[in-house]
Length: 389
Ligand SMILES: *Cc1c(COP(=O)(O)O)cnc(C)c1O
View (cartoon, rainbow, N blue to C red):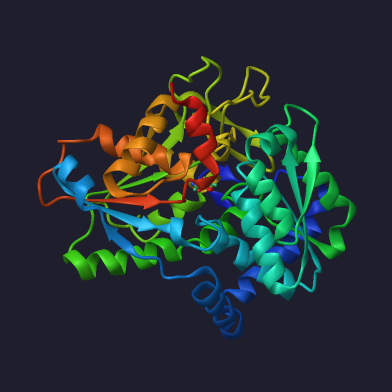
């Protein structure tokens, strides 16, 4: 083990030795690419013309009235494909091309990352295999179909509980088989070094844009930034531009609390501990033997048992405040946003909104709260209808 890729004591490369060459090559190409004018120009062009960046910063007037302060949404739901995930998928797909590899593999839960990866692979001219747990395919039928329509191959994973972490394991096996020609495109700020660093880099425009936009609109920085998350890609995406501003409170909302079914929770900060998971030392929900416990959050996108190493570090340092939202609160937030703002957020995003609503009346009139509106909720409408009594 070397000390590269650590955030405090979190991160690292806990992988079998034969993966090192692929990770080393990825790291090398990434460090070159992020300084390469041609690479950055091509990335920026795709972000602007294909993904639809910069995304707007929306002054949520009705939510502001309800809250008693000024609330702004960073509209990542307007990124093509419906969430922030395309930002990272485009970046890594371009890296794949720069490495001279022809194929991308990945895994997906809610399907959003699979959709984004298929889009990115397609536009950059790469083939794409998406591993998806059978339970998640069942929960997210439309997205599974969408992946196929966008030129990707969906590979159904039956082992384990047929959810995200099983799809990750299966994708890893496939990667090892085709290492020289294949890039494993990880969708969040998790996994072995250099992935957390790469994903955070390819999401950092969220905060860079938001910072400029909020200063232009209001002349000051937000009091609080709220983001939902699992691995933390959208959260780090918006936090990075504000981490050094000690007066800006950073709030992270994970799935958990009382589940509607009374089953396990996915709250790795609130209820988990530090362990090794999928290549990195990080916070996760685990049992006494260091095995990850089965998690069950209503939103498939937050049903991942681990937080990323950089997020874990910010949490441990006290820079980040962690909260949980229950499935019930998430559903209430979903319904409230439709009526209040005419927006249907992804269930993941509803975690952040639920925390926002809990803070009603706690701010002064001129305080600014910035919420990362990570995705749209089309994929969750079916579930919302079924859960309504
Ligand atoms: C995937 C997803 C998330 C969670 O992923 P992070 O990497 O933690 O950001 C949040 N919101 C939406 C809309 C998503 O699709």
